[in-house]
Structures are given as C-alpha cells and as structure tokens.
Image (cartoon, rainbow, N blue to C red; front, side, top):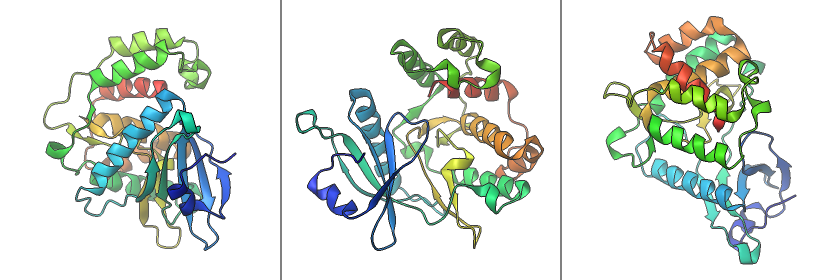
Length: 270
C-alpha cells in the first residue's frame, strides 16, 4: 500500500514500483524503484506520535545537510511533507538511496566488517558537538523510554532473549537502576543513535561505505550509546571475535562495561 503524497512528492516517485521495507521502525518505509533505474526511500506515518518522530528526524537530517560531514556519506533528502489529517496525508520524507547494500555478510569477512564499522563510527563521532542542537543524554533517553512504556508501545516479545522474562516496566526499572552518568567532555560526541550493521550501506565492488542511514536518534550524548549498539549488532551477525578489531578501528579499546550494559538495555525500548 502506497502512502498518500503531496503532488510535489508524488512527482519524485511517479511510475515507480513500491516495495515495503521490513524493520522495527514505527513509521512505514518503502523502497521505490524508479523507471530510470534509480531508487528512493519513502518513510511515512500519520499517527501523531509517528508523524512527530518523522518531523524530528527531518530536523536532524537537515542539520546534517548543513554540516561539514568530511568523508561521512549521508543520503540526501529529496523532499518532505507535514502531516495533514484532513487530507489523510501522513508526514513523509523522500530520500535518495545510497548505491550499495546493507547485507555485508554477503561479501565481507568479519574482520573487514569490524574495520569498516569502526572507522565509520569514528567519522560519525567527529561531527561538531558544539554546533549540534539535539540531545541524547541518558536522562533524555530514559524519559523517552518511559513515554513509550506508558503509551503501550513497547512489545516485550521483541526483547533480546535474556530479557524476555521481564515486562517493559520491569526492564525499565533495571535501566533506571543502572543509569549512566551524563558523559564528560571526553565521551560527549554526536551520536548516531542506532549505529548497527544494517544502517551502513557498502558497495560490494569497491567495499566503500556509500551511506549511513536512519538518523532519527542523532544527538549529543555518550559515545558508549553507539558502541553498545554496534557491538551487539556485530556479535549477532558476525560473532564476538571481531569486537576487539572493531574497537581498535574505532580507536577506543577499553569502553566502560557498565555504560555498554545501560545503553544495551535502553535500546530495547526504541
């Protein structure tokens, strides 16, 4: 089912073939294959909370587009629209598709993936902290988790296996008990918010990163947030033996295990 788009956005996808993209996002995402061989992504949502989240992500994307990214590749926003309930129009973003694939296991060995993710995360954390207006402090993340639990938006069946014996309220209590202190200057960086294997796009022929996607969680916070997400993703897809190489490529070989555990718990509430 396609999203109801404004005439401006409809012109970006006319004639394309829509394919739903599975994932954990509360918004709906499609990849649209255009007649000229290019593809774009459409992210849309009409419910108030989802529409607000899309608007927040757009603000972060626009900040990225106005920032010197160095060698960090970020796909461009091609168009967007605000939600209009009267016209049954959802909030939506149309973005360019990076040339490559996220299925890195098809063509990369675990050590190569570890090197690629470590160096790419280092580039993310080189973004200018002093000019970033968005927050990802531990207190803000706990507050967001509390709101999602209170609204019944957290499904405990999707928790990691070790946490499925807990209700959302119980696991949130564990996270509160483990809450990390606000990061000091050394750990305060611009975080991606969901830095995982699937959000790094790579060209198989050149083995170059062509896009880092899904910036909804961007903000100034603790580098351990991204390290925790990346580490869990690497272990899930490639095994734990590549973690030391990932940390070496990132340049931070002794992360704080308690901070990693805290951010791993909080990730269950997204």
